Length: 494
Image 1 (cartoon, rainbow, N blue to C red):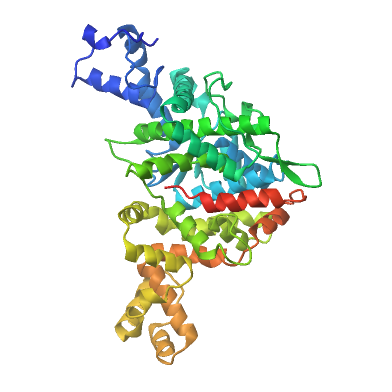
Image 2 (image 1 turned 90 degrees about the horizontal axis):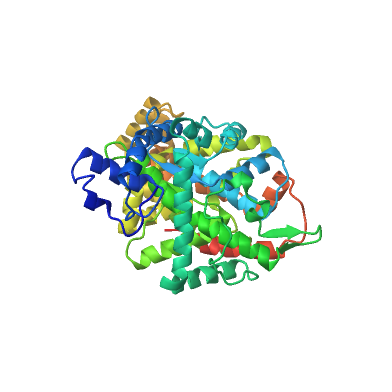
């Protein structure tokens, strides 16, 4: 359907600039076509066939993402594999690699806490429905369902996915010649995480140049470690190579797809961007891309990644090294058994509401490097909120105002007179209550960070706690623990 490279459709004057048809052609090329490259042009008969499909495709995906009926200020695109690993953990099913599965679970938890809506490529929609049920979420995770889309626009969705995937693989092959340093850094990062990993070579990698949905992939594509009931060891070198190549290409595929979905979900050129939140095995590719963007002065700092890096800096030297994201520790702290996980997730998601609603404001602050506000967030993460109320809570007027606002917003508080008397008498209880109430009411984003850090500090041995919680197989885990420690030190993405 696509035109040969020597043909230029502009010579046919089929579409003139500024016409609705020309805008529709641009939209087709941007949203995803038989050829992903924006420079590829169409024959007139191909355009005549494809143009009518675009509005229906867009309506179908927007409906599945539920953006019209329930607008979201933050949207994440997640891996099906990460979501499936999460469901397996929660349902007590067999796990291929418990360490990768736990990191994937932490990724999904982070997306749930820091984003209003999660989108996932899900052939039937069953995995998204299962995850929502297991975590008792009210349709927070929305499937982009091939069956639903195909019923409206035929194979248009499949063609788009194949095109983006082929583009990602082509980029990886070309980078070996056009940007070898780029891939050298990627290979070095993989080697640092998994010393048994071989140098990477994408030429000849058997992907059939098309997107294959995750349930149809070999289970080994989500594994780094296996065990013989005595110890956990990395898989053989060839299996690792296949796993790494597959996940690198898919990470790039998802980055491109996130951009496409951002365009599809916009209304009148406005709307939140779709952020790709990749699982454990997609992180190296995302890190290298972030590093290159930083070199080109085009880095974008995400709130959760920055907070994760600050947590690691604060606590990497404690008795038990940081191996998991701090929000994973916070969930474990609120959980006594597997049945407690949904309520813990719901509670922490409620606490993080202010972070989601003010995400744009916070990331603008981080991008500008606002030192005072960044220090505030770091102190809140470390459990220090006294700085925010040291002046405001020492006057009668402030005390009365806090108590009045608290009562109006249904926060359980002492009466204003009691609060002021307690503070005046030097009561630790009164002063502590007043500080926390003030921050909760007037600095809700600081309160969100404070509460999450407060819970996370209750669990230092998160790996051991998680293995007990999910009844995972036990064996000598020294090598995977080194992997997790390296991963924690490296994996914050700008």
